[in-house]
Image (cartoon, rainbow, N blue to C red; front, side):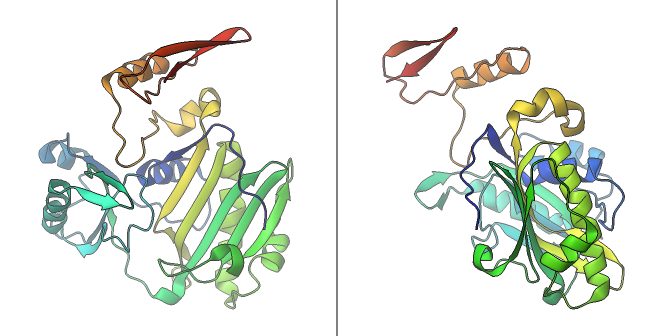
Length: 298
């Protein structure tokens, strides 16, 4: 397949941020727009409930840790088909204990809460768009979920050169060849066209939906899980569509006070102000380059 090593200023965003951007900006298509809520441990539950009035004691929910952690289902960081009371208890139990992901230790503090959508596994699919130097690549596999396996090897792919857009027939013939149901083919093709349009216009660099739920009877598509990255250099172009977005730090990496201070300055300035402290006890060296200077903690 294509080399995914393109860097740009690509920054990962949370599931809540990604779904909010898609829901708020995608053109009319078979995608079902669902309510979605974000909870972090700094919030009070009563203020959370005032903002998210769609949640009540009868609503069946999915609750997930939302901190850029991969394979959450296999790590026990997703709870499905639960009541609001059970979701609150689950969040409390997960946030009280330090967890280990690989070699990294940390606490979970951010969660996303959505309506639970009952469905059959056979209706789950996989779709991914990512950018390479000469264009974009769309992957599609007719199966999805946590056991989807190596999608790079299994999926069909469509390369889209710069300044080009895929058409309906192209998607049907090159991506959806193993999707047997004609109704599903139509739904997915229409969705991918609109999703790719959004991907380009809002300067995504990576967008993976797994599973993508395709309901033939309702003629509706649901995004059950999503992972995404944005080109952060496009903030001045897409600020209105993105909304007030803060790029999260990886799990286990908390910003130091100095880093938080510079990040706040950066958010209020037209200049680019970045600080990453590698060693708090190190010396500061200034390295002059062109019209600016970079500082390194060594």
